Length: 197
Image (cartoon, rainbow, N blue to C red; front, side, top):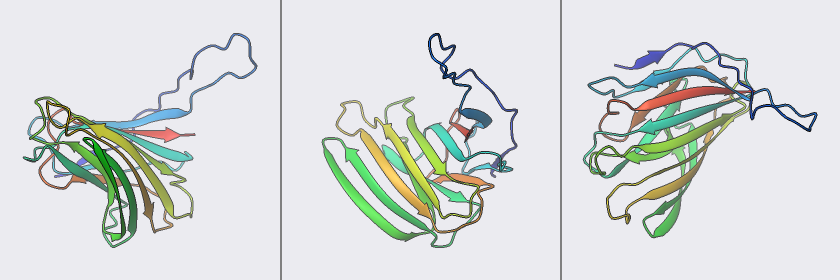
């Protein structure tokens, strides 16, 4: 069963703080919109809905672990529930001591990248930052993700990755589903949504 998040109250900050000798005074570029923490028992899908139309871009920050038996597994996403072959993916990954790249031109989901699985060291979580640019425009959507995970105890199986996705649909983004290649998100997985001004 999906976990549904409605918009949380916006959090306005002071950016980098008080400026002493410049006319530039940051006022905060990110508003916290929603945070989902997976409860005991885990979750197969995490869904964020009711995304407002008042921002330029979106950012999603993920700290997650999966129940799969592998050291790592992919987390994927779908925008507005779209499951047709609407996603193009370019991927670069540094895995252990080697690196590789790949392309998929007709995927049914976008790839955010790898997270720690059940085969990773105990209590290790993967981290991902996912940016959706011009989410509210009539443009095709460009999505960038950056992340990393340590998946074994002797440091030979960690990974750092960078992905670029294109969502070949001009509709504004109002919901995002997050799931994984196999298994579930474990308890204390955190997925947070920010609006970027």
